[in-house]
Length: 115
Length: 140
Image (cartoon, rainbow over all chains, first blue to last red; front, side):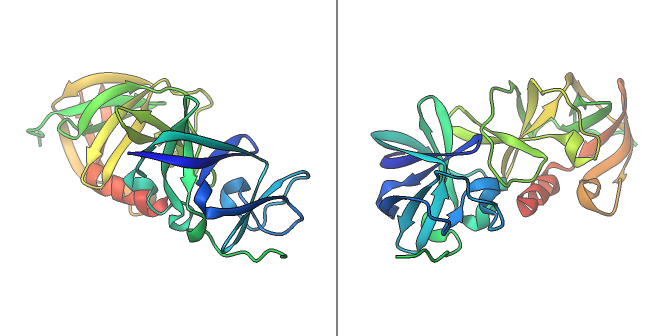
């Protein structure tokens, strides 16, 4: 299946993707929001110069973002990973010759961010 | 007691394992993996193979005997719950096993290993692939 409109994110040495339609704004992180490092551990420390993906339910902090407008192939989550990230892992996309775990922002724990 | 069905025998580190041959779909070369942050340590990562995403599971980490070397091959196992690629240092082929097929432990991954069984190459732990993959899914 092909999808379009993804945001490719770097988090430390890892990468993940989100659907662009889930992001309402891109901002400089100000210490609020859930950092995606270490598998969305709420105890993880947000690095300096991080980016906040503001969503309807709160926000997700990553190290860097790149909007990818072209269509990409979406692959489903394998059975053994169905519970990963509390169910927020919603598949994988192929972009730039690599696999990117796709996170469903609406399924992540809600973390309030300052308006 | 002899097992009437063939098993694919492979080494992972210093231990020998076997999976029912009808669940072992192929032996694959492990490419560069994509990590899933926060996943259990025995899940080394995933890769795309023929249109599906395959998780790679390191048996040495599951059994508490981690190796430092990167794995180059894996045995692809398919069950109704899904497919996983089990790391292998050597693949020895299909063999008929003799011996016991009792549970090798009462907790963790050892609940899903059976034996001790014997293959021509030596003593092996037989992986109950159905319960083993269910176990991985519950741990993920």
